[in-house]
Image (tube, rainbow, N blue to C red; front, top):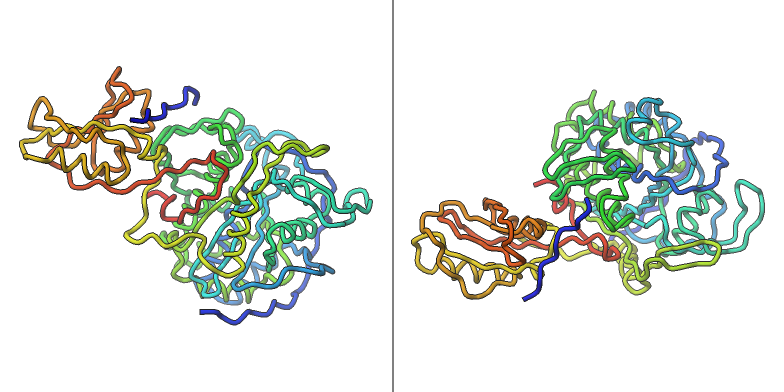
Length: 494
């Protein structure tokens, strides 16, 4: 039998829609600082809530007044040889700095020291299906190996030919336009709208919705961001939510693990917005939308009509309507001279992913019967001995067979427990294998976790009279190069 992994010792084809005509422009001078490597993460998750919140039907006048807060950019100016338009809508979301807008006390509290870099390290494509019933979110790692098209450096004015870079460096060299051109070149997905958010709006939005609930099976501690969350369920306010989405040092998965947590937070935010009555409260709707739009830069075509049209079509949007993934990675630490260590995309799997976006297809097949819970360790890596703790004949064999059918590696020889009066099913485990125990307990709803020092690698299930069923679970491993697809209701708290 395999040895379970120990816990780490350290903590129908629709018609294509024409592009909207540009609206009035409101520009801001592009920052001139070159890209650096900030230690913060997601600044863009709240932008998706703009189109969700519009479904409240507050009206054109309110949205028009709020639209005035949006700073306009023109990322599509003079662009030629662009990919063919697909079905649905593709929005490129990027996150920039903005710590200079946060007070000194909060910067110290949430470890936001240093000068703003005016760069981007979070890039996502959000695809809204043509029928407006599904959102597919694809995270593009900031360190992805990329090759720019020819362009003029916005800082030096120097003309560059196409050259290798890390994807997030495209913004520093050529701003929103070069970022869009580079992403389109890599994905062959035509970008319809561009939204850029800094983390000030992120914090404000989380606060105005009353916090966002997240769940974690393991403690999360990151000395760089100050994040310190015990295992369990938490409601995060703005500053703590910022620590959660920017943390990179809670496990060995670095940016890939961080993107998984960002996706989880986005699902939880959508759940909060769509289930809390915010969309039925005109004043709350106004406040939330103002918090989001206050620090947004967007293309000229993303205006009131587009937000209201999309919002009305998404009245019934929920976490189960969304799906999240990271572009599949072929090589970690791909060295490029003059660029450094990069992430190289898997050409076959990534093309399959972006082809699905272009064809307006779901990224994964629908899984009937409700969401399958995600667990830290795959059942196939967990060894189990079953004991019958009741006077019911054959219960041990039934539990053993059900666990084996769910993928767990059972002994296939259940035994009788020392007593036959066990009421609540117990998962006994050696504390060194606590992650495996949590995975097993998830598959046994209502079971009790009981640490037993020295038990060893094989976990023990003592079946009680409350035993009802074994439910399917599946593992989420953020360190395996991305590519897995999850629905929003699979990563939000149940």
